Image (cartoon, rainbow, N blue to C red; front, side):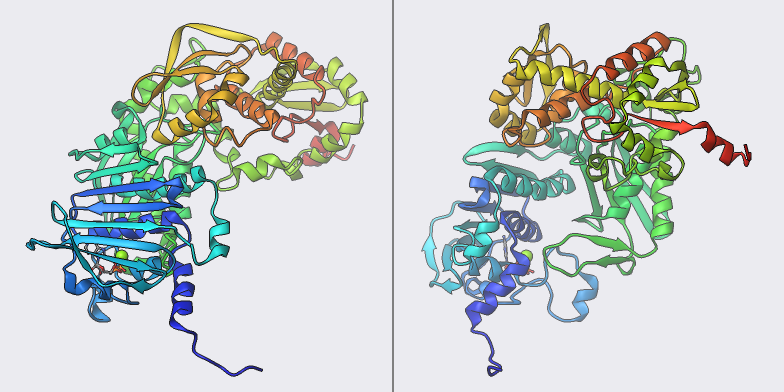
Length: 594
Ligand SMILES: Nc1ncnc2c1ncn2[C@@H]1O[C@H](COP(=O)(O)OP(=O)(O)O)[C@@H](O)[C@H]1O
Ligand SMILES: [Mg+2]
């Protein structure tokens, strides 16, 4: 075996950097935290090519005097703590003294700064960990300006792992936004390739900041003032049910003033929201949690934000009660409900309140969305939908039914019995009870029609006399710009309409919830979705989410159209469209022997 050696310092630096600097977004996080720790009231972030060629963070904080400049780039150089005891009472975002050391060892870094109360400004350059001597520069005001160029120029393996500019930019924006939400009174700017993506001047209220930063309507945001339970405190912002998004990208959790990822907190919030939100869409919320530090396990990995709460049961139930209470008692959600869901006339209960919306969606809704694995479980046929129904229903028979052409004949003969919880149509035939998932069926029918129109190049358009104005978040706007040709080809014709909005002028006639479908198409890079089937699937999915109530004739008509499909047995996402419950199965359940 070769002799043990201590690694050269530049190698140590690069290994350490690997822990802290994973991608441009990690640099954005570290530099923004430094600016905020320096008391800045203004933080500008400028990126080029998703941060691959430039990450620049400029602030008006306390600045760095010349004598400290060289030191900053040594490992464990920090002004934020002095001793082990200080670790117990950290008030700053950073404290390890590793960020500048790490970033500068894998990039070309230029730091300019003018310290508080000093007239002169200095600049220092560090390339791959090699420092030059500071030189005087001109700088108008107090603060610090750091440019990180050519990230990973000396670690090609890491460079290779970087994703597209859009993806890297997305990641960086996802780091930027939480800080902007955390400090509404500070000025934040984010630009990409010289274009302003977020310009957020100081405001007083968190709701105002969120509305502007995330392109939401302030009237749909409920402010939750601080609620206390023992040593735990919650406050935040809660979107009402009008803010429903195809992805969970409007969900922010902070613990003790830091942006964190917490699966359990997200789970509780999303689960409570199931009271007011239909399946397949996700709410907006910002939750600030104050807990005694000893109650939180912060993953000590410097780049990760995942935290674990020790007394999860207690804190989780406090969160649930508080959020449920706020959603149930605050007016916004209730009155807005009609915008999204079509109520059956006369069905809406008088005493109103959010409970009524719940009726429309039915009690089965809550458990039907498995948290954290939505895409995966939808994509695998035959695994059930996370509700544990596999044991009860003859799913396997449904699958083998693919080969069983007579099943179609049986369904054609089946007699309509009724609708269960407005989601399932029940048919009987011979010894079988067929349960048809109304939405899955609708999706299948739409998808096949739409695909056929697309492949024959004749998507039937609905031209809107009055265009639908859709407000887009900065991220959606970027995706829209990139994907416009694909959207047009799909039949979603839109034009830019001033700040942060587009006007939808035409949509495929088949798509009945065009805004939802359009937004859902913009939930990812449209350009990347070169596969037309995938686009069609997504559009159709969003289009049947709108919770329709169907009656007998419509249900029968739907079944007929379903059976005319090339593949009537699964929805375009691979879930079963219907299952068969055999009489013999019920007999067994009732312990009947015959
Ligand atoms: N934008 C900034 N303004 C003022 N001081 C800064 C700034 N960025 C870094 N510093 C100084 O550099 C030190 C090292 O930064 P860093 O490597 O991120 O470690 P840490 O933040 O953990 O202390 C900080 O402790 C701080 O004194
Ligand atoms: Mg730091």
